[in-house]
Length: 297
Image 1 (cartoon, one colour):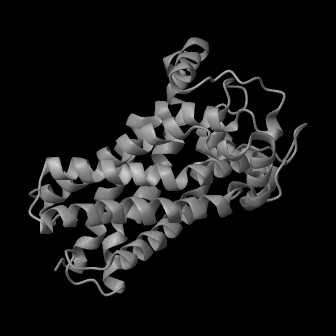
Image 2 (image 1 turned 90 degrees about the horizontal axis):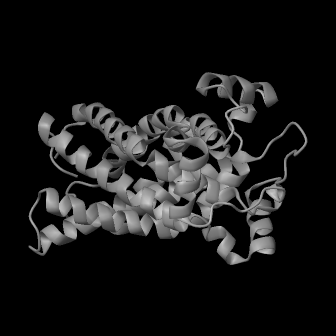
């Protein structure tokens, strides 16, 4: 059994691995955000110019240069460093609270509950950085915010601390589903392969397990991700004003104006981000654990 004193080391390693994944996948995240907000009822004045992931990627590069693909990378690193450290790093300690003594023989539903708990905790802490990331990635023009600090100050000026936590409802809901899907999927797939003797502990197993976890995560979270992005991106000052009173009104507006497919806008880039993000996170996390002498997940 792992020693409790390794828990804080694990949290730090999880933060490092998630931060690295955030940097690598930021270009995909920018395109995903643009796809998710175009066509929404609150933004009808904007024409739909991001026709799919590849064309969207080309549009960003053509209009904003390569730097456009790394908009919001600083708050993204801040967000994933803290959020990832908590949701992934505390997953195993929370499993112990649910009675885990042997990771190879622990019920799936308890793994899911453990993931949901750490996802909620992580997102509650990281919501302000997530909000800034979405705002900075959503706009082509650099006129909205001069930088990360200016974004924090400007949003705070809109309505104080509550303004920094706009969208916390769908953010927490998404985080609970993300972590309850992603981390337990990796954990369960991996130990199923090991117990059946299909694969041994190592990079090939880590890669396959993380690919599976990324796919499951994209399927379950895409609708929540669309709602979270749109709620966070809406203005509370200026000409546009707040278009959604809550997450449910946002989801209803999307279905009413765009159909159910509106909730899966940006699915491909979402999967293309979550997949590599999950692979990078878990493969680096496992290698860092090995380096410092902590047993694998």
